[in-house]
Image (cartoon, rainbow over all chains, first blue to last red):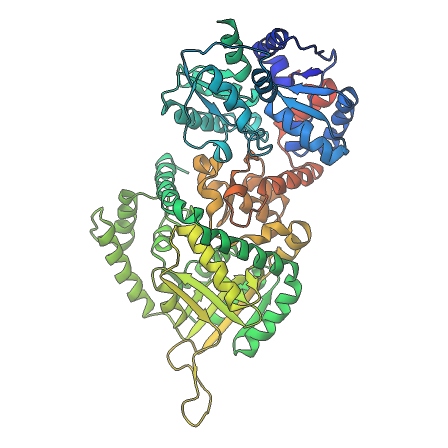
Length: 230
Length: 401
């Protein structure tokens, strides 16, 4: 299995990579990381650079085809799963960390403790509305913490505001929307906001810091690792 | 959009959303939605033929029909009818806004009297912007509205909705006595029957359409086959737009006012309009039909903007004229051009897909926007920030180096 970290995790949030690697280790799962991992092409596809996307995707697909691919980022997941099929005609065997973690728990490969925390979960657009994966992250969270739900979840999840190239052009707008989503979370008794997209996570953290908020925002891998370390 | 306007708009949208929730979830609505989806898809598929059929049947029913290829032709046709008028009455019409009818009439020194309460209020604001296709003043709070009315009508008005209603009604009714021509849109048009279907809650369309001459401005995308189809479309539109099962009024206009009560001799203009002029507007819709037909499925309910995250913080600046939100951005490409589409917010959409989920016609707006971005980039109309990141990704495989 290849663990494809994705650009944001690889270069901006190494703690998600660390957590994921440790979980894989605890589950005794062999994997490798590409020496020359490059972008999946999502950003290029969403912002209209199709020719450039094809170029990048052609390079990436060579490294990934025929192997099982684990991804941390909802954006990478949607792109590898759907766009590669649509554009390159290649069906990749791709799994999102939330789905793999769910499998680990179901098959008893990991025995996490129950954390004394209440969490809520933000459905990223790419994993939720685009790929209809709403259950796996929640199944994992319910086993390790108390899960409460915010308003606007699942199909109606309110976008964090960073997708589609908006954050790079209109950072204020992206932050503003992330702030609104954080407000949804703050209206619940949750101690922690969990998500499964590195893009959402960065945007939430920025918005929180700007408003001098304190709500911790974690990737699913991080909270699972915590439950495994207790 | 001002912060106070954003807040007022979101409050209005929240109320609307809560009100329609139950109705949207019920079985009858789902059945109606499926029926209307079929009707709209079928209409788009045969749009070319439907236009010819509509022109024939509207004419046969005694209405004058003008096929306008663009705004200029539509405005010219309207001008021919209103050139001797000092005042013209109008009901709410997104198509009339699309061709900038208000600005045009002002330029010709003809005073336009908006009869829809929300529209009348918006008409008095500095930028005349509307925040929702059915509730144009959704972004204005009562204080703001009262201030606008006080200033514009020079009368003392308290921050009281009922009092505002009374004052505006009086003012509009007085204005109507000076009008011989009324302009409306149409929510759906039955091509085979040659009938125009209009919905309203205030009763204003009845007043406006009963003036001596009734002009109807309508996009060709509003065509369906029959009155039954048209009623299904406007019923669903009402449900999604207002959270009410039916509007207060549905008017069906199929002819000028007429009678044959005396020896079967046909006489025109008994009580209603003596003359009905229908402007069937293309204005880029034929091109949209070729390149992006899903965008023509729209029934104009505005559901897409009520839950759009971007719209909730940007408001009417996301969209083009009264074609608001992401679908409006897509439409602006065909109504105008790539530059206007870019400026209307081609890159403001996060592609989150919420609007498609809430659209009764399930228009895949995020996919359409992605496609238009492709075209835009190819034409060199793009965001510098994206170009820079794209360059990095191609060179180094990462957006961050």
